[in-house]
Image (cartoon, rainbow, N blue to C red; front, side, top):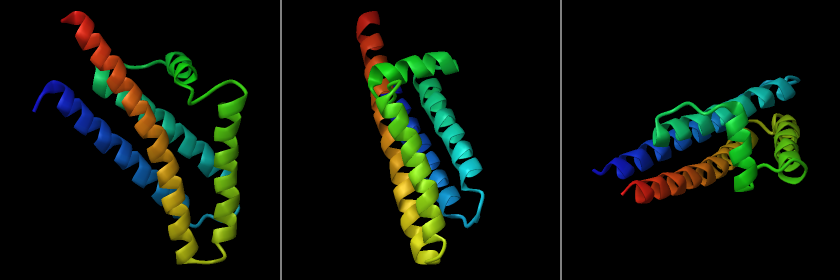
Length: 141
């Protein structure tokens, strides 16, 4: 397997792991403490981004560098997407409170939604890192 192929596989596994973890953590019943849990899940998303970066470039990514790249990529803009991300986390917290009343079925639905959101953002980030890595390889050749 080529170096790029190995990096892609590692990135896919990392994103999948964080998506499953996010879905599982979101589904766990915790009445009344959803906002702190969402802050932890957001921190987990940031760790996922830095992990994928390290897979491709074998260097740590500063939080400032991460924010600049997310803005460039369009995943986070100061007003629009950043607010949408916060709203999606808050909506997940509210949805979580509502689904707590429906029991395991509601928890399962919420786990799928939350894991999908994390997986989507992680996949877009991994594709961006892959693109940057491929460009770097072409320039060095």
